[in-house]
Image (cartoon, helix red, strand yellow):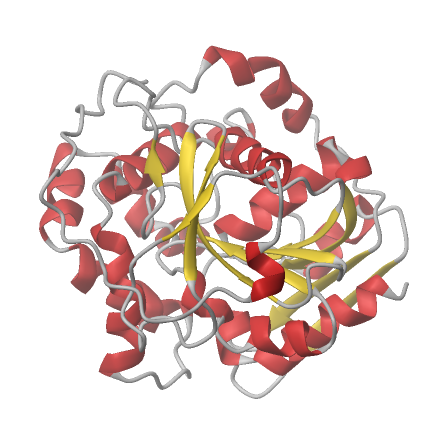
Length: 343
C-alpha cells in the first residue's frame, strides 16, 4: 500500500444491522459457498436480504435476487453511491428470470477486508479482481456485467481481460479503462475544473476534509453529477450509510491518487495494468448508456465506439438523466441488460 495511506483500525464496536428479511429457499440452497445473512433493517434493503460471502481478500456484502437457475447478472455501483442505485433495476431483472447479484464494492457497506494487513488499495485492477473473486466464490462461470462510474470501469476491465467470464456488458459512459501514463496528460481548463475533487484528494487537506465531511461531500457530488435529479433525504441517507465503512476514505483517496501516479498500486497487478494501459478492445456484446444530463466528467460516445469490437449499441437516455443512471432511469438500464443478453 502507498505510504500516504494510514492504517485503519478495525472498529470492533461497529453496530451490526438487524436482519428482518428471509433468504429465499432457492438462494439458500446454493451449495459450496460460505455465506451468512448480514443483519439489516427491513426498510434498508427494499430489494433483497443482505448476505456476506468470503471472496478473495474480502468478505463481500451483497444482495441476490431471482431464480438460482437464471442467467447471472453482476451489477456494480460507483462512487460515492452504493447498492441502492440498483434498488429498482434488480427486481425488474429478477422478474425477467435473471439471477441478480449486487455487491458492495470494497470500502462500502458491509464489505470488509479479511485481514488487517491487506493494502487498502483502490486502483482499478484491484476492484476488477474483486469482481472476478466474487464470481468464483459464487461458482459463476459466466455473467452479464453491468455498472456505472467505478462499477462501469470494473465491468469494462473484466470484459476486456476475462471475456470468457463475461457473457455481455452494459457500461454507463462507455469505455472507462485508464492508466497512470494517460492521466499524466493535461486536459483543457474546463475539463480539469470538472475533476476538482481529484486534485483536492491529492492533498492532506483533501483527505482530512473528506474524512470529516464524507456525507456532505457525497451529497454535493450527487447534486453536481445529476443536476436534474430530485432525490430526497431518505434516498440519500439510505446510500450514505454505506460510506461509513471503516475503509471507505482510504479506498477513495487511494483510487484518485493512484490515477495521478501519486500512490503506488500492488505489484501483483503490474502486468495486468500494463495490459490495460494499451487500451484493450472489448469483444463481448455491449450496450453503452449515457444520460442526457450527466454532470460528471465523461467521454463522448464517438471517442470510444471503436473500443467495442463485438455486437455493440449506444443509447442516449433522455429526460434529464444524470450520472447515476440506473437509479434515475431504472427501466432503461434494466432493458439494456435484457437486450444485450439477446444480441
